[in-house]
Image (cartoon, rainbow, N blue to C red; front, top):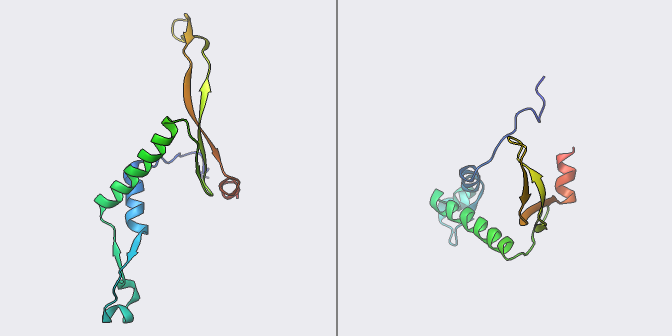
Length: 121
């Protein structure tokens, strides 16, 4: 029996680009005669290069907003926000040496209730 959490699947940027190419179809402004008979011909597909630019610009926008300390909320997906972590004490697990961990900003993600509900079905 295979458990759903036993094999984690990693989605990378090229997988996202491929999904955008497959799912985004732009309607043509002007219909030709054949398109009345075959409505599926009434759209143009995104090229892989355009889809890649869309995905890259999305990540640039989100990254830029997070760099400025702003929250990014995606409806029915979740919220990204920057959290400040204070400096603290720690130790090197290899040597056991005590060290000071510097303060830093980290990105925190919280799922929306609708995504949480879909995940737990």
